[in-house]
Amino acid sequence: FGERFVVPSSGVVAISSDVPDDVATLVEPLANAVHVATRAVHEGDDVMVIGSGPIGALMARMATEQGAKRVFATDRIPARLELVRAQGASPLDAEATEDALAEATDGRGVDVVIDAVGVEPTWGLALRAIRPGGRIEAVGLGAGAVAIDSFAVIGKEAVITGSFAWTDEDFLRALAFVEAGAIDTTGWFTDATFAQGQRAFEELVDTTERFKVVLHP
Figure (cartoon, rainbow, N blue to C red):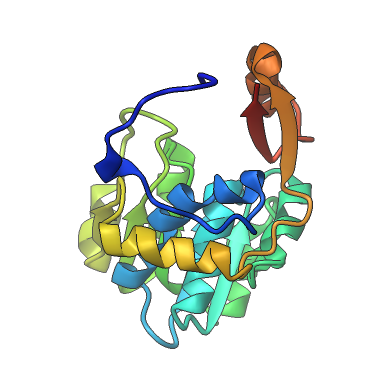
């Protein structure tokens, strides 16, 4: 969060001057979503995204782009569900997520779960929501260690893959999406100065009014 910093020229990627600075900040997180969706989502899949913050919303958008038949999303904050709806997802009520998902899939479960939270309850939800032989993408870093139902992993023959970053190809694809204006970011951004940064982080934790905060000098 410095006003100026030095990076090697090999780490610099040009972006169109037509892209607003706040929207340009999405290229890197979107590259993570490109990485996950390209690997995990197949044409016609049912996908569930757990967590509808900026990362979850971008995961939903790229799952749709990758050809998912349906993308479901859940979050404890209702306002976020409307933002993820704009990315092509069908929100599920956080109070009745599993019942709603079972009804939508006739009890089968989904082909892919993307956990963009990464705490013990969401790991449990992922294993209950996935169909036998399905794929779970672990993206969220909410907890360093969690207990996992090994019987569910084994009994469903679930494939669990961690995802941390992206390839250069993923990054350039994300850049092209952002430059094309292909991501609906209405209602996403709150600007704050560096001096307001500490409070901005606190508000992300303490309130439901912030979604994506961009700091500037």
